[in-house]
Length: 143
Image (cartoon, rainbow, N blue to C red; front, side, top):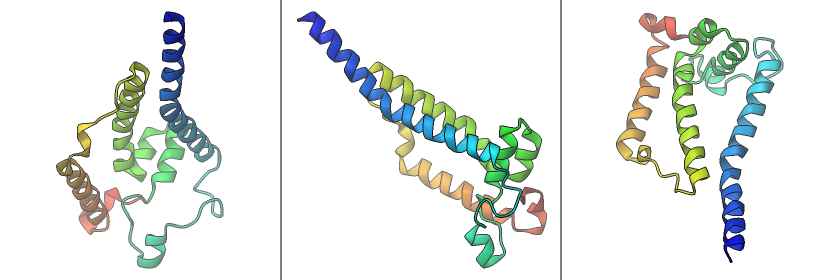
């Protein structure tokens, strides 16, 4: 009976790791693609619809070029293109690592970040970043 229980636990552990490892594989493939296909060359990626329609930079403008720069270990250029996107990467890696560890341990991947205050706080930061980067005094944030 213990052999069956151990085998069942292994299967459950592997099954619980599918989601975090799948996210890592998809993210790694996307990062590798952006690192290989230069977004600075026209024709590879579509234009930002917000920029196209309004002539203003959205909070995400410059993110592809920033990830391309990070893929080539050019942190300075990446920060110059979209500092908010670069600043969020350590947090995303931390939360992915926490999710992976909790999945490996068989514990639920609950997070306190789903609290509305955190969601609204992130929304305000992104909104303020998007507004400031389009003002004359925030031009250093423009890509």
